[in-house]
Amino acid sequence: MRNVIIVGSGCAGNTAAIYAARANLKPLVLIGHEPGGQLSITTEVENFPGFPEGIQGPELVENMKLQAQKFGAEYLHAKVTAADLSQRPFRIQIDGEWTETKTLIIASGASARWLNLPNEQKLIGHGVSSCATCDGFFYRGKKIMVIGGGDTAMEEANFLTRFGSEVTIVHRRGEFRASKIMLDRARSNPKIKFLTNTVVDDVYDISQNVVTGVRLRNLITNEAWDQEVDGFFVAIGHIPNTQPFVGQIDLDEDGYIVGKGGARTNIEGVFHAGDVEDRIYRQAITAAGAGCKAAIECERYLETLGH
Image (cartoon, rainbow, N blue to C red; front, side):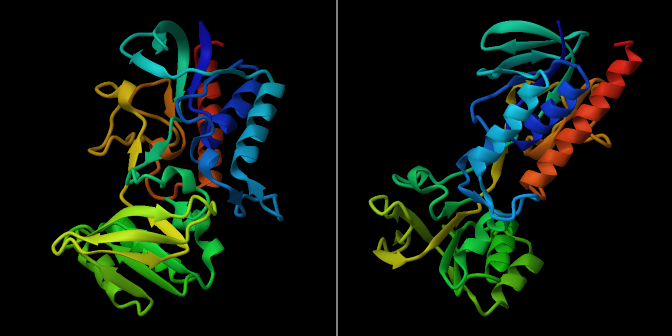
């Protein structure tokens, strides 16, 4: 029997673990299929308070983990394969084995959707990114490409014009699904260019370990060509990691947890933290803050149970 199980080991999960461990709750943290979350694929983090020289993403989450372990948090290289939240204590299936817990903090994050190009994954953090607010600063005066046709793509492109010399939005269709106001804003920005009915076949150059260009193809004419770019931002959405909780936790149409105020969910004793609920900010600092809130609410809930 556990006091609290924390699902996820990114900024949200690790911060929740620090607070829960300091409250002597002896949390069990399930590291999950993406150890360290989105920060584990981020190279330089310059916007987390307290690091004026910046810090590597993997180093930041590892420091948080060590801090939580110092206070008694236990980490397990495992993921949730099923959950039964219909009874108390809750039952969590961890790699096929059932474990009971009084409370649960879901901090399993949201995974970026990628294009699955041959070289894409190898260049993440080296010119390929899914977060303009995280990485835009590194492309001052550079040529940037944004892939997508929705509001997120328009918003990311507009933000990136603060840094890049030019921003090209590439969309596979002729029409955009973005809202009129977001599309108009992008179209009225002189730094933004559009390539429609076009797909990316690959991104270069893994031999230099940095993005230097892309291979594009027009879907109508089938014409292919190379184009120089320095930054390659994929803005085609995220997939929240909530699959084991479908049908139990209230989720929206995209699978994000529907919060019930604070860090609460529709089930008493089950809390959320980070990108698994937050589809707006998606920052390391907001995830950390959410982890703090979830752990404090979890501690207070356990007090009502007489822990």
